[in-house]
Image 1 (tube, one colour):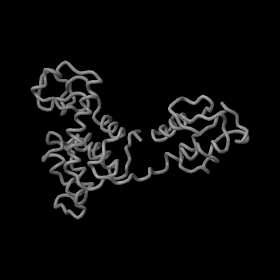
Image 2 (cartoon, helix red, strand yellow; image 1 turned 60 degrees about the horizontal axis):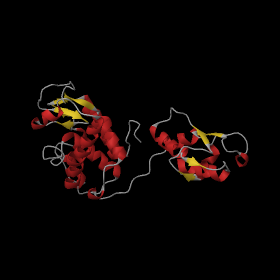
Image 3 (cartoon, rainbow, N blue to C red; image 1 turned 90 degrees about the horizontal axis):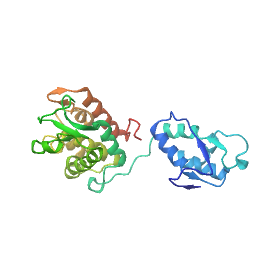
Image 4 (tube, rainbow, N blue to C red; image 1 turned 45 degrees about the vertical axis):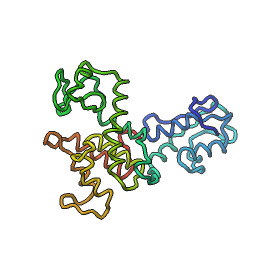
Length: 268
């Protein structure tokens, strides 16, 4: 069985559209599978591509003998998708931060939490603004400095928002993680730290001076304020001096990503 991005021409496969995002990603792989006809060998390869276990082809829902299934016959792959969705992701290998780059899933994670705004708004209230003020923001959380107000006051396009995000990810997120985190990280941990730095800033008052970085770099580090890395991470929940539910939720999602590799919110 070969895999490609082309829609299947010889094999039609079906699945429950209500499946979660991880299953949908697995389904995308399956939908790209092309073969002249379905056979037990093909079904075994199909199962291995979804669950990692060739013998799981027996879970497939089909009628008749798999050896005699014809091209364009339908096979319900939902049982395989359910098993794949229930199994935890295999842990990623650990790499130095300087050798990593934020993944596509990491970018989507940040975009989901930031939201897209094509008109300037107040980061504290979320309300659209027509005059510059501290906290003026646009796009995917891009902070508008006062000298740049004229450039952004009338809004931006989606394409411009993407370009700003790419630049901000590097300067506000990745540069800070690569500069200040010395411990080995998995891809998910790196993405979570980039997301954190993107939100709280990478400088001394943000990631660089945080207990989070101290604990990650030195597992033996003891803080008089926080009992562990999780509590230090989730302490970043205030904006404008007030605890914000949105930040509580965001820190929880980041922690799930850092500690369990779970991108959540249908991003896997």
